[in-house]
Length: 294
Image 1 (spheres, helix red, strand yellow):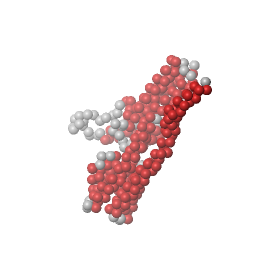
Image 2: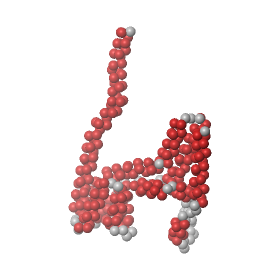
Image 3: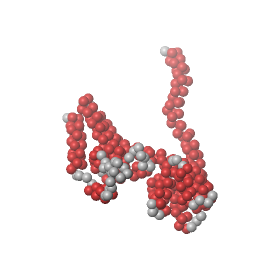
Image 4: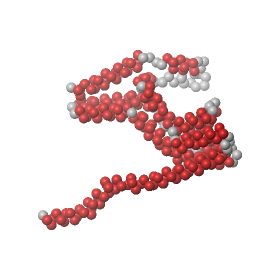
């Protein structure tokens, strides 16, 4: 009886959320802001396309997502570099649609096969995992991005040091390093310069850079640059010192990973390689002993 009622409860809950999202109406504050932005705009001038109002599914997904969950998703999306292939609107739709599809499939299979309570618990776990799948993907993407920024930081600081010692200003050196680079660090440097050109102070732009990347070494470099800017210290000396420190830290991290290899190899060696060797070496002897005593 419980197994048969689960699909009905899921459908009833989904239908109730759908009706609530439709009846609550659009966000009036956002609608007024969009209307003010497009006031006096004629689509026939320049672009022929009308302003994007967003699909109904994206609007429903945004309304069905709690505000704390949306803020967490937006924070993880920012730390992942705002990937263009994963827009936050698409992730919101995936958070709503994928658990419903997984829940419908699992509960239908449960009702058809009359499975046990354990199968129902597995279905619930699948629904929870699929709901938090966008967060897991963004978190993994953010970790990979932070590691890549950490690896690129020392070489980028060397380029900026050479540019500053050649006579360029600090902003020009950042622009040159960002234009010559192709990784996430170069993109962040260019965005920081754009923030400064838009009117932000250098301190605010660098602090925003540290929050977006969440890299310890980069935050240390940002604090050094802010202090040098506040106290009038020569930026070339700061860059040279920070570049040397970053190279030393990168070498220490490589040595640490190399020292961890023997420890990590022990468990595959004990579980996979040694049992096979024992079977190959001792198997014939055991067979001869069994044959002799039998």
